[in-house]
Image 1: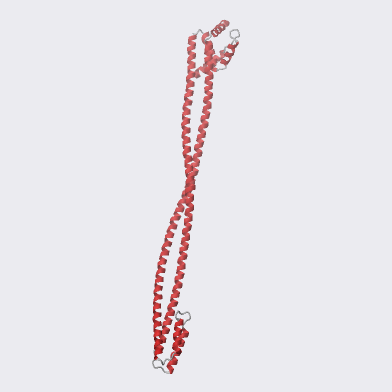
Image 2 (image 1 turned 90 degrees about the vertical axis):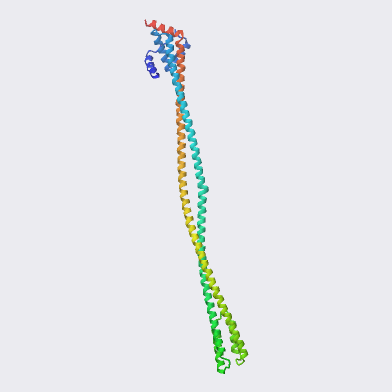
Amino acid sequence: MLKVAVCTLLVLSITAIDIKASVWTSHDQKMFAQIKQSGWGNFILNFGELHLSTGGILSELNTEIAKLIDELDVELAEVHHQYARRTDVHNREVARLEQEIQDKEREVFNAHDFYDNVLIPQRDRFAAQLEQLQDNIAQNRRTLNEATVQRANDHAEFEAQVAEHNEAISAIDESLGLLSQLSAPSLVQVQKVQKNLTKIQQSLKRHSTFQTFIKTLIEIAVEANFADQGALKEILVAFNNLRVQLVDSLNTITADEAEAQKDFEARVIQLNQEHAEFQRAVVVKTAEIEANATKIEQTLDLIDELHADLDTLNGQLQAENDDFAFATDVYNATVAEYNKELNAAHQALDLLNQPRFTDYVKSQLKGAF
């Protein structure tokens, strides 16, 4: 309807009213000029002049113009309605975006918190634990190596002691053999025994545990009067007692060596078991470190993604606010224009119903004839 009215307005504008000072007061002329500045006001005045000049009834004119004004009111109400709907959509969209932004900011905070306070400390803790495991493995191998070297040294010492014992026992047996031949010794036999005992004495190693005791016995035997059977018997008893002690000592160090070897083998098993446990722990810890590194990478990617999503949401919110601001400007300008036209239309309608407008139309008709 508005488009039709505008087209009619363009036609009627060709026959614009020429106000004569003789009909209108200066106030009327000023108001008339203001109304003519409005498209609808100008249209109504021209339409009213045409209607009255062709014999139309004023009440019919009022009815038609009132319909036009009602249509303007309806159109303005529709503008208000559409803007109200747009405002409702805007408010819902802003509320949705602000909630999503708040949720996304919470996700960003949680991701940063998880990265800073969980993953990084975990990474450092895992690295320290792996380093400790590697130190444990190194210490375990050092301990095993030291125990192996010590066992070898101890065994070598054992073998030296066995050799010393066997040498001492052999020397005693030889001395006993020589001394047993002196029950009724001749001078030649005594000299031979003494010569052999001196040889045994000289052959004993200085580091022998029983060196001093054996040498003392041999010295006694060399210096003794072998014709004295009582003295000879005491020497033989002393040598036999010493041999028993040597055999007991040999049995003891042999048993100690067996026990030491057993303890060493048990220690080796224990150290190898600990080493295996450390190795398994290294495998587990390495897997944990790799999983932690993967999680760190994933979390950093997630943080980048969340920041990108947050930027997108903020951009959408800004775009929505800008679009609504533009819609509001258009709405305000449209409402202002409608109000301007409606005000001019009401003023034009009031002017049409004044007697001087009818008089003006009549004077125009008389002037034409």
